Image 1 (cartoon, helix red, strand yellow):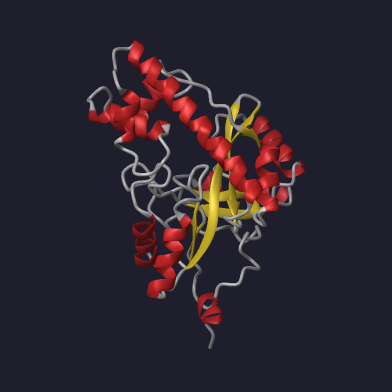
Image 2: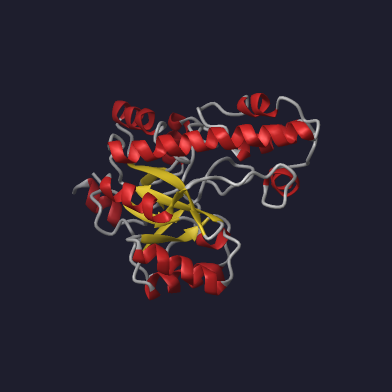
Length: 289
């Protein structure tokens, strides 16, 4: 019996949204893969923010140790839509595709510019050397708001990451700096050119009314989007069913992912609820070996 048949005789454990130290996660790519294997995950996607730099290390480990897991090359691209930051996950991408890499390089420069501007605003609040301090919390090339948040917590200026965003880094925060991201359409195009599928990440997390969420999904669909995350980190059963209904209504595939960054603020790998039977999983026709 092939491994493919064995997998489909049991519940397939899938996590298509996770982060490493290449962006704002706390585990190295190798550590993330090992945790996924320990959690008996069959399919794992590494989807760092605007970078694919963690994927080669994970691929190398799986090959060297012949680990029983399928790794999906992914990325989470930050985009702008009607004054909202919307994240688009790309799955099964070619990480050497030049058009995608060019877009990600521009995104990375945008992150650097934003980080420096945040640091400047914090300096006006007498929080000095914030960029350099935040960088110590990043083991990769990216310094994100999450790293600033961890720095602010470590300094005792706020009690936790959530408070850091509320007081300093979120839209109403003292040091908020709007990002200059690519459009959703540009992200979808780059993902498709790289051979991947475009997924609207964690739709429930955006501060949108039900009407505006439908408008977002409609635009996403019209621009060529392929799927939405139906099962995501820390959601109610009602929300799961609502997103499943939207996936069916807009004839989109369904994805799922923990959005794992760490064990304190996020769900563990592979712990999202299963997709409802009313939707078609994005991996329905993937080869697993």
